[in-house]
Image (tube, rainbow, N blue to C red; front, side, top):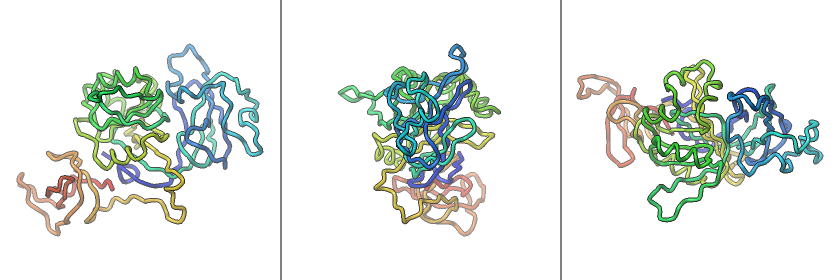
Length: 344
């Protein structure tokens, strides 16, 4: 597993992301201008289909069902004029409004019509994912054991603490949910749901086009393939921001080094203007939070308790540089240093 930002969870950092729904055969009309402040649920793009009869078109769930094309635009240019009117676009023009997903400032508008937004966010990076950008309200799944049925708003981003399976994915998609954040899934279940070969999908040269043929559900898996549960540090952060608007990107592309991520804009009172946001580092040192990325203890996480000066001999007979970890349950474990990656 690789984390482009250095850690799997970053509690606070400033990012710039292009708000772009993905896919082909559409016209994207920006509804905001550089320098403008935007809210997470504020429409920043209008997507107009170029060919409604084409199967290779705009993916579903670009916006919340409550956001309709007949609503009055929330994005205003300086001076109070609606951005859609300033561009010569009528408010009743057909199309779909795409919310920002992030709280922040518009930095640029790209040639293809995407909107670049700068925001101070909490980031959860996944090991594997599929699907285009979607924005929605973070909602924690209570599970089927609850007495009262759970009400999940359409277009939500559902957090499932445990592994997914084929049946649960089908149920989630039928519920009108835009995206799901879970711990892991078996390879057979994921390929059965996607109806494609996962290796070919991840190795695709045109990753955006390959996503068009997948089911309209964005997925982020924090632990990737298998049967692992979600680490406590990730689940606690998601519980903290439950009910807030967030931006989910599922697209994974090995060739381009792109991995899935969940971006949650921090509330204004949590942003310390005088302190720089967290800058993740990859250096392994005492006290660093790490995850075992291979071997018989794969998936376990803990804190580096000791760095051995000399190579250690393991039961297999291999002599290698090693670290001693204090796992989340308090147990101590000595593992080769090549089997751990920093996560915090």
